[in-house]
Image (cartoon, rainbow, N blue to C red; front, side, top):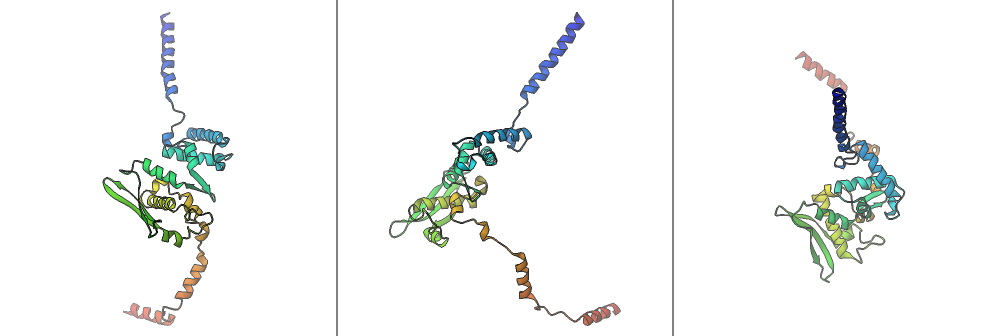
Length: 247
């Protein structure tokens, strides 16, 4: 009886030790990111599949599990909900882009700066919005972004784009541009290097405008530089080498 009782107690003791270990094992640990473990990825894919079936998410995410997965990854990085990311991350010409208003909110909520973003605005002689500079402070030191003005908008042809809001909402557009420039110069990690929707629509980034033909470049360099250096005849080179050897 004592032996049976002892063996039963041992088995029960082993079970009580093993069970808590199984219960304490985490299936997912999103501190590692959705790609950190296979379990994380599987769970994220299930979430993406569910979100892609919703009619409440933006059109670019409906029926597209891959786009939803990216939104989930970004939401984990920012500590936001996937739906919030989807509402503020536009897909334009196949490129993800933050809405400028969301970018301003992300910077203000980052805790990186002492105060929320400020905007120094000036008007022209007709009292119309003319320029804007975005700034804040960090550890008491002022941090400025580049100045944006209407001359820049016209020179860059933002003003002339079809459907441009620069003509009807110049103050808002100046603020949005000033904030996006501030982000790119001072804290690109917050936006993950993404452009804003306005920047892509207005052509700030266009792959078609950045093309290089290496072959043509080499030909041009040859044409420009050929016969500019006089080389001695081969016999002279051999003769000079012979003199050096005799010495």
